Image (cartoon, rainbow, N blue to C red; front, side, top):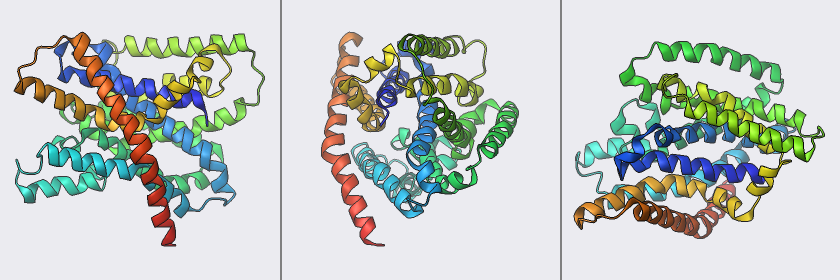
Length: 349
């Protein structure tokens, strides 16, 4: 377990949370908050890195089968996905506005995590909208056992990424503004290079981790990595079209942050290794999936009961409720459900 990267998951989940707070108040529509969608790119690249870190060599050595890997991934993402999807659909009464027959046509792809392949907002965002990213992860997980063997030689992986680095920006530039979200932000095929970046990053990490690095040097590198990321983040709005910022623009700064902090040798890494921050990273999956639901619920209650609560109170309140529910979900639902699904699926061998 790389504690620093687990803790970073929590901070990037907070960025996504901040990006969605515009639902509560338009003051959160400024660049510093709205650009928080970069958190999704971080999760995709991190996913490629962590999956390769845990499984690449074991796959190559045939110590883990494809089935074992897929069962572990299904047990990780599906229980909470199904719970939140059903909760949002039933509590939000989202099936009936379009009629049950039409509603199920939208619900079933969402249940099977196929909805981000459909470039229509009433599919990929209609139900529990953050779940579109799980559709991307599902594709990555399905392909990884094959990728691990095919990219055993890192030259192939580098070659594939070089092709992506040329093709993706060119294709992005040819996409009209109305379609960039459906084709480049949520589409699993378009986000697949993010995962490959993470896999390559693991190869770099595997070479770097045995190198000696002093505490001072590592601390300076960590500060430098954060500064580079912030420069990319803060000065992108007026310089870089949004379609590029959805993915390829952030490959370099996110990779730099992940690589430097994965070494866990500097001052900031010591802070990130704090057990409470690590717990924050552990619950980040729950936090990510339910936070928008909580935000919308608060907005509806505020309208219904004519609340006029200061943002200094309402945002911390929404955040606290989301954290509390995420903790309950992680310890009392996700972990038990993970074990149960593994036990059921492994019995069917």
